[in-house]
Length: 113
Length: 112
Image (cartoon, rainbow over all chains, first blue to last red; front, side, top):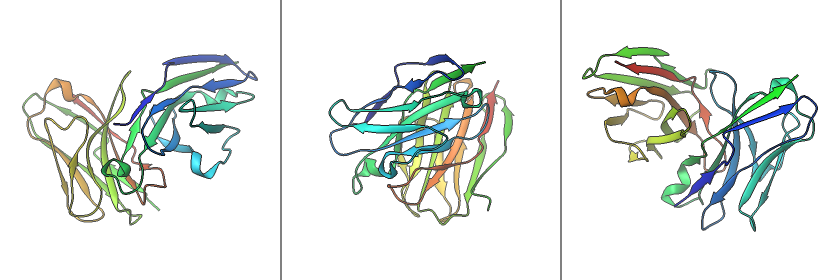
């Protein structure tokens, strides 16, 4: 079974402060991990894929297989970063579960002026 | 480039009524999914279709049925709506497991 845990439902920081949104996963194989962002009442948008190791809007995330974590980080938060963030996991290709994403419960980030 | 289109955007049903949520994608994606989003529970998979002609249950399939009409369209049906089905429903599609999903804009359903 695959499981994603986001321990913080709410996270509040001040503009310019560093921010880290935590994500831990449980999966026996090599997972594909993603971060999605949802701005108020909008559709979910893909923010990051671990496989591409890219930086979007100043956010980065590193897969730590030893700690089974994929934390999302940004060194200087902006007010426009306020949104709901979801961590998601996909299993290995070829497995039945590999064709679907399992989401965490989400973390609501608020960046205060 | 429309991406994933969901209709309707809003709907209010009475308990026991039925309805079908429509989803269509124009990206030639193989896989399509229906999720529900509830406060504090994240997104939970209702049903998915890994490829045209196949459908499978997700975490919370009870009370729902789906049809993969063709490669583009994947509909979700509530046969007898219940207040517990009040939620925001998202359709998504994806090309291959290496890529993330593309989501629709959601259907906000209220069952009274």
